[in-house]
Length: 308
Image (cartoon, rainbow, N blue to C red; front, side, top):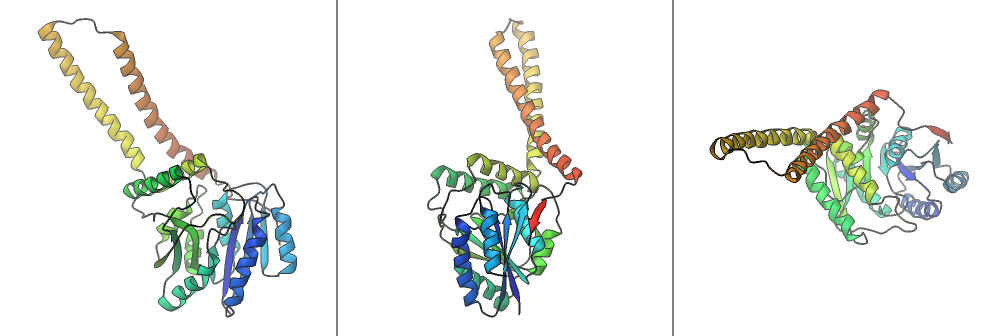
């Protein structure tokens, strides 16, 4: 029998895990022709998430757990889950039930009957999200699609069902700074998109605030586009042209009308503006350099403390 591995990243989700397990267990019973394994990845939780996973593992042999030595982030948790999965198909699901488990049979049928390599999901609405967060998210996808050669689908979720070939392709990219939405697009393969309306968390609160989402978006831009480097170069060229034109203007003005002493406030403003532009451009270069520096360290993406 073919097997589906369900990878579930968890960070302080002791209350959500039983609800999720109950729902995914119902789905597994409907898909009787398939074996299942449930991989719960404890991403350095400070609550009783690990204890809940251990209790489930005692009751159900299909339940596996991996516990990190500290919090490495969701990207590391997804990578660990895919790396330790043994199923013919692998799906990644959030434990808060924002990813509808009932879509799984349809996703499997699309792969088996229609020849897709991957079936991914995307939200068509952002109901329940703060308006500012939804606005920034839409602007980000428009921006990154203009800056990158890899298409990022607006509203795309990490929730997807992949064949073993797709998973192995993703695992072959062992970069430390990971942006999975871009990696999923980068590997290609024949992908089917399923749309659904946004669901709110079954319990608890999101771990992502505006700042974390901003840094995650910045990570995606740095990982899949060199456009910011070109922007820095273009800005430098523009300011060189402006300064050249200003020099010619000053020479002509001096020859024609003399050289009256200008006020220092305008000069100070110009110095501050140009210095700010320089620091901005250096910051862009520094961001790329820092990512390169971290990659050359060749540190592990995650460290396992215990597992069953």
